[in-house]
Length: 211
Image (tube, rainbow, N blue to C red; front, side):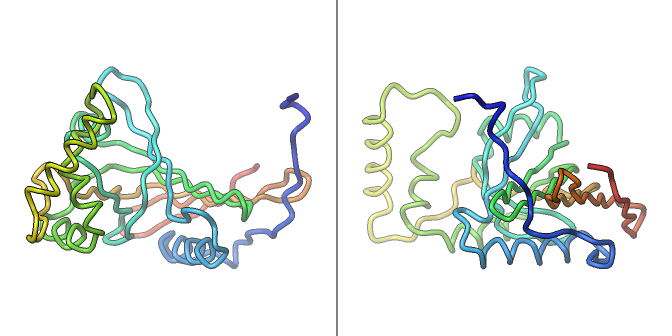
């Protein structure tokens, strides 16, 4: 395939200054709901970028679970590669790739752990199979075979047979506290609309950027 010939026009609409909200979170909530209503696959999927322990940038997909207290919350294993990276450098960036809507949102800031109470409450809401998986996998560490992973899973099933599955101490939530948020809406003739929010004390300043 000749990738140079693959292109399309962006014609689904524009983003004007009169559509902006006082904070990026209100506009994000609108766009997130529209992505859900459009029945996109994994509408809360977001690409999380961190600086790993060797100094290299690394990206992976996580699922956004809520937006609160000025931040974007996701959950993971506290012993995973991403967690080890964040322990050394809390800076991170998120990209929401809503390609079907000709949209993307980029969030930059620093990451902090959420409270144990918040993590407990979310863990309790997860399907039981997902709860068991959090115990069975030592995320990011090598394993000899899938069979061994499945064996670990079944051992956890037996361990918590007829009992609630508690949250593992090595599993919980993070909040990316935003300092910059950029909204991108594709436009005709590559004249895309871009607006960047930057936090300034207790207010947000907005700037239109050229495509």
